[in-house]
Image (cartoon, rainbow, N blue to C red; front, side, top):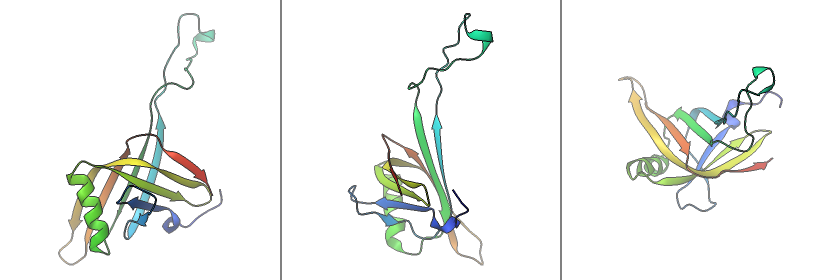
Length: 137
């Protein structure tokens, strides 16, 4: 992957849970992290006492986060409603020259802040809540 503009990494939500995704308004910073929990099967007979891992086991998860400003009331309302209802929403991350990651996520953190002489900002954290689909671009 060659260098890409950070603004091209998009975080989208589908309020209806289908496939009509809307970009979450004015995210200035975005991040996606994939993690896999290893299952250690090392025993006394492991070659050279090197750790051995069991492939295909363990828990996979993804976390999406972003910060910025809401430019419209609709995107603010969708995210806020998902959080306060503890509802699992359908989100999509568009990663330039890589692909899209789509699936169910829960809003696990929603923070608002602002300076007296500036705009209101927000920070958002999402945790995967089921199987994710990857589609290459």
